[in-house]
Every structure is written in C-alpha cells, then in structure tokens.
Length: 102
Image (tube, rainbow, N blue to C red; front, side):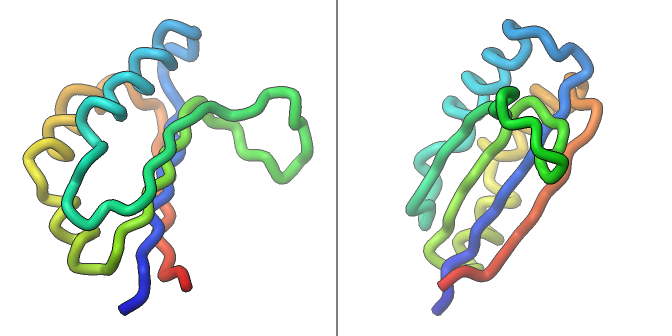
C-alpha cells in the first residue's frame, strides 16, 4: 500500500512571532503520535527565500502516513478535531495538499 503525504500551509490572521510560535506548539501537542503517522514536521516559511514560487504562509505542517486508512482515521481523530476547534479562529487561510507517495 502507498504512503500518503498530508501537507498543510497556514496563513494566520495575527502574523506575529508569538502567534506563529503558538500554532507550532499546538501542532506539536495535538498532531503528533497518531496511529500510522510515520513522519511529522512543522515549521515556518523561510522568509529569506523570496523566489516567486514560494507561497505566502506562516506555518507549514508535513505529515506522512503509512497508508490511506491511517490518514482517514487521523482526519476524524479526537485530537485532530480538537486542534482545529482550538485554532481555526486564528487562521486567515489554509491550503491542504494530499499526495500518494512512493
């Protein structure tokens, strides 16, 4: 079975360093250690890379799941839902990209 990469890019309403750090902390609290999660990274846009291909966002989330069923279970997992409920008011925009990866 193929792995599934789940990439999420958040633009915050409050783009301050403290707001960015808060979302990084929340992601590490709620989104790690889910069944089937084999890779997890959360980070920030490198503002020194000003190439036209770099989108404008504040926080990026990179997750790789062992398979599609693991990803699908994560989507409805209590901790994932809690993360969304606790933080969605701080988001100006969210872009999500899911890919089957080899």
